[in-house]
Structures are given as structure tokens and as C-alpha cells.
Length: 363
Image (cartoon, rainbow, N blue to C red; front, side, top):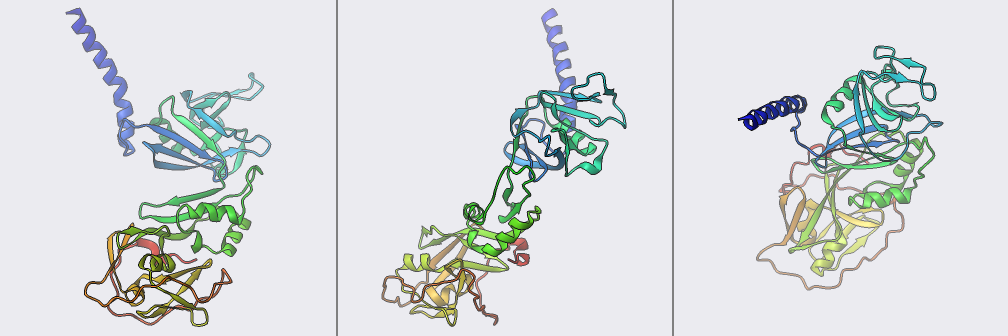
């Protein structure tokens, strides 16, 4: 009987301690049990909360001054405190109790020694290099974060000036932030290499990247949406890209897969095969075509299984052309060669998926 009473009492205590955490999680739209992680990026002055590997919150933060930088490294939340007392570093006799004059605000999460994530009584300082090394947050933000993360939550502090993101609708965007700590140099080649991992490096000019490196203001640069191209059930190594409302396909990989000769006329900016002639576009020495012209140039049909994969299949019951090795008659010499674009309307164009904001992407 005593054992039964003890079990009941323990169950009540557990439920009472668990309910506040559940309520806090539910009030923010998150499930109560998740693997949390915090990543703080110094150049972007941002804190991102991840739940099970997915970013669920992002907050602007204030970080350490150049003469007292926020330390890069791997940490975890060691302790949490509501209404903390501020103690001046190195002078323990100087204290400020919780209240409007307390620099820590009303929440404190220690990550190592005197370093922590906390609120502030100077909300205008958020977004700047302003602290002695701690991470400042707007009071409402830090109180929300405080309720979401338990003690032991991993905290990574990184220094990453180039941030590339892929949105849920697969649009690639990049940001370049300033190097206030003089800790990470960036150049055009490095940016191109990173963009290549997303298949869109040829759709941002080197001139534009250079401008972004000079300003380094963290503004978003929308590039495009990359997708896989499958020709006769063979996936190409090079991706297609949607940008500015146009669906670009890499010409030579398609021609190679079909074993079909293609010639490039630089003067007229046109591509030619035995099937026909269509406009061509040069993106950093690589030839592209508009997907709507794939029938005219290659006698292929478009088949969008989803917005991530475009299937190109041979049309049925047509006379095929003798296959030859694909070649280009004139090499492209300039990355920024101005290409003439076809403006006339085309009837019976193949349908493509809705790419959301892609019509607004201009580079």
C-alpha cells in the first residue's frame, strides 16, 4: 500500500513539473519533446534555434565588441536564471539587482564562465557589436527562447560571413556579412564554389558577387531554383535553373546524352540541330536554352514529375535524326557576353510547375 501511495505521489510531482514545459512549448507552436540546438552566427548577428535539425526560430542579437569578441566554439546551456543579478566582471562588489537598470534583462542562460545569452535594458543595441562577449536579445525573444530550451542544449557559436539558404520552395538565396572581427576573408572564387554546391553558381555574375563583397551588408540576393534534369531516364550531372521566370536547361549535357550535334552561332545567339534553331543563352561560358524550346531543338517532351525533377523524353512516332558527336562551332570567350533573348510569344508552350516568387528574381 505504501509503495502504491509513493508511486502516486511521484507521478503527481512529475506531471506538475512537466506541464509547464508542455504549456510553454504548445504556446509557441512546438511539440514538447524535441532535440534542440542553438547556432549563433557572429557576422550575421543572429541566433537560430533548431528543433530536430530544422530551423524553427531566428532572432537578431547583439554580440561582443571588437575589443571583447564573442568566442567561437561549441558550448551548451549550463544554467538558467530568471531575474538574474548583474555583477560587474572583475568587481564582484558592484551589483545590480533584477529590474529596469539591470543590463541582463530578466533572463540569463549561462554557456561558459561569465558568457551567456540574456536579455537587455538597451533594446536599441540589438544587431550591433556591443557587449563584453555575451549574446544580448530583445527581452520578449529571450523569454521565449528561455522557455523552449532546457539545460544541456548545445550552443554553437560560428563565424560565417557567407550564408546560403534554400527555402521550402527551393529558391536559393545568399547573404554576405561584414568581417568586423577581421577573421574570415572572402573572394569571388570562394563564393562561386559555395554557390556551385546548390547548382546556381553560373546564374550570378562575377561582377555582382564583387559588388556584394564590397558592400557586405547582409542583404538577401535571390538567385534561382535548381532542379535535376533526366534525359531518357539518365540524370544529368548539370542542373537546370529557374530564374527570372525562365526555365534554363544546359544544352551540351542534353545533346551528349542524345548523341546529337549542336552548333552555336555567336553572332545571332542561336543554337542549331537537325531539328531546328532556337535562342541560346551563355552563363559563364556554359550554353543554356529555354525549356519551352526543347521540342524545337531536341524533339523532346517535357514531363514535370515534381518541381525538383524535369524529365525529357523522346517523342513517340517521329523520324529520328542520324546521331553524331555533339560539338560547338564557336567557343564562348567572355563570361559576360550579352545574349539576345527571344521576346515573341510562343503558342502551345509546355506547362511548368508554379515556382512561386521566381518571376520576381532578377540578377
